[in-house]
Length: 332
Image: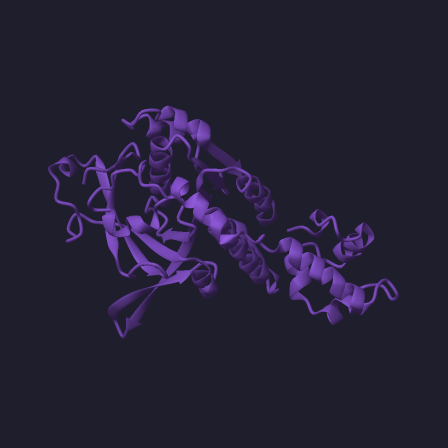
């Protein structure tokens, strides 16, 4: 959150702090007050006043308290299974990580050619089209997903009101990490938001972590904490697409394994509720679905595995199949 958005802070103090590079609540709260005081012009303020300002910033950046009775009152409307889609048997093992209104932050990772964005778009559109009261937010950081692609996918749905669901999709193009807060602030003002997708979060945070300063890590931690608060407070499923680098471990000349290394560092893995790994599945694999419809070569299968989760068993895996036109095949 920008300090300028906190109306309780004196404007003169905000300007002074911004001149010293302290522009957000994370900047202000992560630096010892003594260090902040030393950065400011002599006589500008006192340590006691800075402590008062810190309390103001802490209150403004914290999630508001919600009575348990009020939260329980929301549950019948947001977690009802009345509008649930019918999952394909091959996806059932991982479906618990992909349902809307879960209040969790889920990382979708995998190789660059594993169709993560197309898969997530299919899942989101399927749920939105089956529930007339559901809205979804899609934050695109590199301009990969087009509304035309979404329209093409929706046209293959048989559910009533399939095309109408596009009116309940909110598309945003965000190129800078600080601008994503505007989208998040808007999303929490609407009821019925089942999904919020960030595709891909690596593009936003990667450049910040490339510098020698620890500021990028502070940005990442603050943003992920903010996402988790939003997910839990408003019962939203937040899906973040993330790149993962792979490296191979060799013993002499024998290949013995592959390590999946988070592109945003090992800390990122612990800032989400689950990490799902998507990878191309070859026809020779034992996981490849044996279905006569796949013989024509018009379909491609991918394996989706739970690498880690705090609410379901790690190691669970499923298969999703995409047609050449990127429609998700639900019958397999």
